Length: 172
Length: 172
DNA sequence: ACGGAGACCTGCGGATTTCGCAGTAATGCG
DNA sequence: CGCATTACTGCGAAATCCGCAGGTCTCCGT
Image (tube, rainbow over all chains, first blue to last red; front, side, top):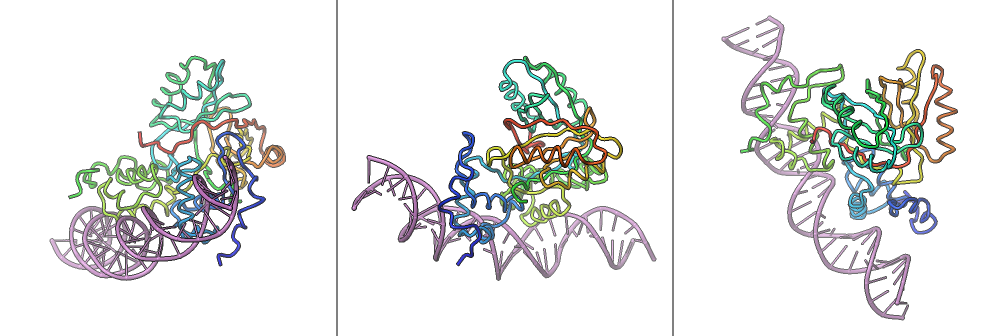
């Protein structure tokens, strides 16, 4: 009776996107659909999600709990810091000599750093930092990041205006 | 009987971070505290939040609704696309001649673009794009972004590994 | 100063949702 | 084949959400 929302979930979709990297635990089309629902509204009731994806309320609840436990997704409030408060934000490109991973770890450990990604291209690492004000920003970049052993150089891009911020990939 | 969680909300905190830019509607310490609660867990019950910030359940609910309506925050599920699926991600730095704003708008309109920010520094705009695979990525960069009139040059940073992604600023 | 509009909060039922648990089908493996 | 594991359904009870009716306070305008 619950329509044909997603398919029979038993056969051929089994291998659509399994373990690509080590940290990619089984994630079938139904879980994907659940995530999409929660990307539209993180507080949507389980029953409504169940109706949309073709599952019972309890099943959705169990799946969501597992996705959260596994760390596959998190349900959180997100804001534009520039809108919310008087802060300074910047993206910092970092060039490293030696072990990139350890530098990335060090950046990750800083509370002002929101986002760290290792990249291919003319930077080894991109890090987004959020600060109270200009002094704080300068401090983090010059006194903390540039002092890390192995950091060869950095380049900063101070944010002027955030134009878009979505979490809707997969929902196109 | 609600303890002294946040203060008396009537006098001096009134001007802590009011209208800095046009889009910054009044946002007092209590709303900030509510947002912080929801940054830890987007599904936390209103009553629990109320206890934490010193407000009734109904008041929290009204405030949250207003914050959502105003677009100050959104409550959503977030994931690491690289963990979730077989996708390619990249940050693209763009240099523009002429109207930066209109290029930013054009980027914003693309569904593959997750994040657009206007910056100071050697790029005018940074845009994060999420794609199905390499072909798709190449397509977006070369056939779409580079073809926009006014785009002088671009530089791409393909993501290799996401190391950190938090939404906890203000909760330090 | 008085009165009204607006913003914000509290306190309640009633509808809805969440939660925990027991029972059942499907899958994998020795 | 039989057993363990996993995932789903169906329920009742508890908790949460929701709308609404006041009440208080501030901010104007007359």
